[in-house]
Every structure is written in structure tokens, then in C-alpha cells.
Amino acid sequence: MFKLPKIALLSLCAAFGANAASMGIGAPASEAEISGWDIDIRPDGMGLPVGAGTAEQGEPLYEAKCAACHGSFGEGAGRWPVLAGGEDSLAEERPEKTVGSYWPYASTLWDYIHRAMPYPQPQSLSDDEVYKITAYVLYLNDIVDYDFELNQDSFKDVVMPNQDSFYVDDRPDVVNTRCFENCADPEAMTIVGTIGGLSPTGHFKEDSGVSASHYADEPEAVESKAVALSEAAERGKGSYDQYCAACHGAGIAGAPKVGDVAGWSGRISQGMATLVEHAINGYQGDAGYMPPKGGFTNLADDVVADAVSYMAESSQ
Ligand code: HEC
Ligand code: HEC
Image: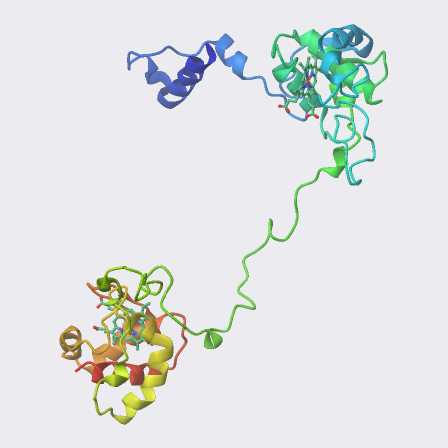
């Protein structure tokens, strides 16, 4: 109950540092308050308090405070967690992960018991009691002898059986250098329809009850316009259909729609050279962004120029 305000107080102090007083709220966290939160133990034992206890001393404490749930031998009563046994079971179909079979560091055991156990009264054990009970749970796992005294120094002598099975993940997708090999061939990539998310008209059906204005944007067949095309424009039609129509056919994302005479007249008046230059190098105008050569197309310049001829001639 009283811990929530403490968290708030600590983070306030962290955020405002020495200014906490000048803001007129809260107070610097005291040593005692900070040490109440600073209880983690590192794998190398850093953070362990001074204290000691043997497995023998831990046995009666464990029986009184832990065995009801975890069993006298750490075998787990009912469905409470098992703390001992399970050696060599990790590769089996139903591995039994216990302190002895699985945990890589003894520090986790000290920290966990100190922080969280006994389940109904966490943090009720003294440091010496935690040393004693930790030693006893290690003993139940055949990791230390009955008379082994666990303290902040002998802690370093405890080697957990499964420690070496934990290693830094060195799989290639975790540590890898960026590579640009074997990328997809841009020549083989085609725009086959409208761009997902940009043109929401594709899923509307004539009889769906959606208002007609929704599919007013559907591409119109440009061929139906009676225009006499130049040779260049004839050549450009195919690449236009393949690489440019996704945007310019429907007039999506700000692209001027091919066939829209009013929309193109101002653009055409810039002259073909400018239009082609914009189509090749890309162009950010007021209407939107024209990606170079229509995107990842890798088209030859004269192919783009032919496509522009087709677009311009079809729009005047
Ligand atoms: C009322 C039942 C109960 C009592 C009493 C109890 N525990 Fe636990 N213990 C639990 C439960 C439940 C968990 C699992 C908690 C979780 O996963 O959040 C647990 C988890 C643990 C674990 C971690 C097991 C694992 O592999 O993840 C250890 C170690 C442990 N307890 C030790 C102790 C010790 C030592 C005592 C006595 C000081 C104790 N417990 C008392 C119920 C209990
Ligand atoms: C991803 C959508 C998209 C694709 C694909 C696309 N364009 Fe565009 N294009 C645009 C947009 C948006 C504009 C309008 C930019 C502006 O004026 O703000 C535009 C404008 C143009 C213009 C007029 C430039 C000007 O100066 O007014 C030409 C010409 C053009 N595109 C040619 C092409 C050609 C050729 C292709 C195919 C190789 C192509 N576009 C493919 C989006 C696209």
C-alpha cells in the first residue's frame, strides 16, 4: 500500500534531482528508502548483503516456511512449483525446470527468495534466514553439502549445473552486418494494381449500397479517348500501363490522372523536356510526390520519355 507513493517520489527525485526542494513538493529519498528498492543481486554476487547460513540451519526454516507448498524435498506439493530434481530432463518432451536443472546463477535464487518468498509474506525473511534457506535449496539440488556455509564470499564457489547452457545468442539474425546482396531484381518487379492503402476504391462493388462517389475514382479506360498518338506515345503505352498507371490511371496520391485535360494543361505548358526531367528524376510538387521513374522501376530514360509522351498526348 505505502509503496506506490514511494515509486512516485523516487522518480520525481530522479527527474528533478536537486531541484526537488525548490519545487516545493516531495523530499529527497532517504538512504533507507533507496536501499529498500535497491535489492537486486548480480550474477557475480554484487549486491549481496553481509550474512551467512548453512543448509543444516536452513532445514527447519524451510520446513516451516516453504515445505507446505514446495514439498519437503523440493518436489512440489500438489501443483506448487518444483524446486529440486529434473537433472538432464531439459531435452525431454516434458522438461522439468528447477533451480538445479535449469537456473544458471545462484544469485537468482538468493534474490528471488529474498524478494518474493514465502509467497504469502514476501520480504519477511532476514538476510541470514535467506542465506540459510538458499543454502538448503541448493543442498536439496545436490549443489552444496549439508554443512556448507553460504555467505557473501563463498557464494562465488557455487557453480550451477546448467550455467554453461546459457550463452550469448550468436545466431545470424541477431548479430549480422547489413548486406545488399541477392536483392530482388527491379526489372522483374511490376506494379500490378492500385497501391494498397492509397486507393480504397477496389473493394467497393456496384451493388454494395456504397455511394457512387466512392467508385467515381476508378480508372477509366484511356484507350476509349479518340486521340491520334505519335510513334513515341505508341511506344510508351506499354510501359505506362505497367509502371505508371497504378497512380496516374486512377489519379491517386496526387498523381494527375491521365485523360484529365484540365489537370494536365498547366503541366504540359511547362514543355515536354521539363515533364520528362521530372518523370526521370522525381518531383515534389504541390499535389504530391512523383517518385523517380515511378518508383523502383530502373527504366531507361528514353522509355520514361515515351511513357510521358503517351500520358501527355492522352491528356490534351
Ligand atoms: C503458499 C505457497 C508458497 C510458499 C509457502 C512458498 N512458496 Fe515459493 N513459490 C510459490 C509460488 C506460487 C511460486 C511461483 C510464483 C510465480 O511464478 O510467480 C513460487 C516460486 C518459488 C521459486 C521459483 C521457482 C521457479 O522455478 O520459478 C522459488 C525458488 C521459491 N518459490 C522458493 C520458496 C522458498 C525458499 C520458500 C520459503 C521461504 C517459499 N518458496 C515459500 C508458492 C509458495
Ligand atoms: C507512386 C505514384 C506514382 C507513380 C507510380 C508514377 N507517378 Fe508520376 N506523378 C505522381 C505524382 C503524385 C505526381 C504529381 C506531383 C506534383 O505535381 O505534386 C506525378 C507527376 C508526374 C508528371 C508531371 C510532372 C510535372 O512537372 O507536372 C509526369 C510527367 C509523371 N508523373 C510521369 C510519370 C511516369 C512516366 C511514370 C511511370 C514511369 C509515373 N509518373 C509513375 C505519382 C506517381
